[in-house]
Image (cartoon, rainbow, N blue to C red):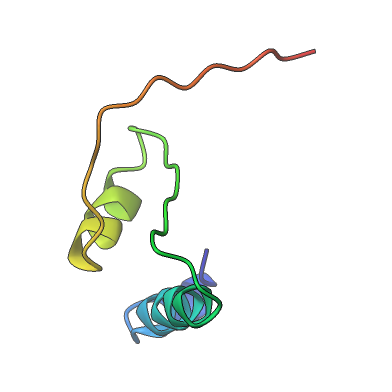
Length: 63
């Protein structure tokens, strides 16, 4: 998450692209992330970066 004062300045995109670059440089063939469906702005952001939504079942046991 980018501080509200820095939003709209491509800071988030630069950080995400660098994280992807570092992962790939270290041999990663894929990069995946999770995001809540209710985070509509974040989900649009990830799609703009090239992430594709995939069908998945996520299971969790919470204490």
